[in-house]
Image 1 (tube, rainbow, N blue to C red):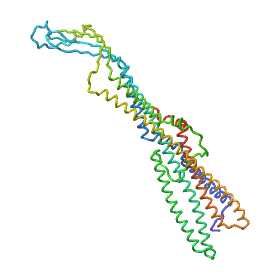
Image 2 (cartoon, rainbow, N blue to C red):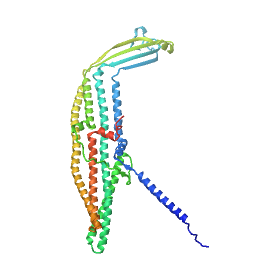
Image 3 (cartoon, rainbow, N blue to C red):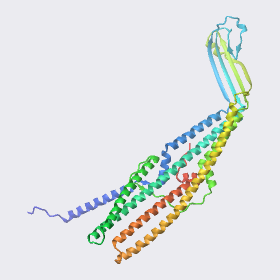
Image 4 (cartoon, rainbow, N blue to C red):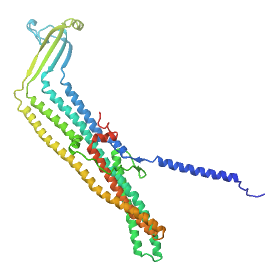
Length: 466
């Protein structure tokens, strides 16, 4: 009887099927992991940065504070109505004749008999002078609120600009890192071939050393690029609150190849920073008018209705018989005669603030124009460099195609192909980096041209709402 039983054919097929199924399952699991890899998209990064920014949230709270100040000031334009009530025990300590003592405004000053007293006073007052004083002060707070909204938009625009710059730097570093790895692979193949050729006397040792130096230098460069990429990820995390690793997939910025013509005056006039300055000017002008009109007299109308009763017996008797006793109505005029010039110099101070704000508006216009021109000039200059890289890359592509045919005919060596491919990768890397830099310029110009449209495209209309 044999010690080893023969393996049946059916069992062998079953084992093979199990192995194949296991391999397929592993492949599917790996593909599933790739499908769920994090993808970094510029639109999502901008949206996350706007949601995460504590500075932007503080600006929104500032807008709410300004709105509360405006509503408080507006409430001062309305008349005031008050009701007051009193229930007390009055003890007379004056031994004189009570008939000779009167009251002032229903307040007993002495002479009456001790008693329980109750009173109700209804008063109302309205300042007519609010229409030429308080109204402009209210307009001042309204201007501050509107300026606060545009200041919030200015902060959002600044965040978008900075995040876009960082995102572009991340994409560029990622391109450098990927292409440097591919170039390093070609260099190592070149080094291997030259070492083998040196062994048979086809290359000098100096050629081998040169390639080894290139490999070492590129490896150091890759380490440096990787560190820069990690630093850029950390900078981006500080804005978005997220965390990114080396395996994240980065979506490149869309490069259209052109910037639409722009009317600088119209773009600046629609920018949030310029509109913020205009609203600040409106607020200061309203404050100046309020300070000037504060030198005019205060005029108000008022009225008072009194109910009163007293009883020597108990508090209930006093409360139950409380009845109307008097009313008064009139006009109150208060004219400031001398205050040491405080009101005058307050008005002069606001005049100087208007002059300062005019210069502030001019500086903002010049700064916005400078930003637009800097972006446009930088884009135009870099576009010429991009065309050079593009033409050079097309030439290398043709050379690669020709060299492959020559290699098939035995006229070009594998080493020559590696050298050519290495040079083409370097040109293609520089072209793609330039392309992404141009795409960053396009995003910045779109932001400068129409901030509101940019926010709509990026679902950011909620940013400064309250």
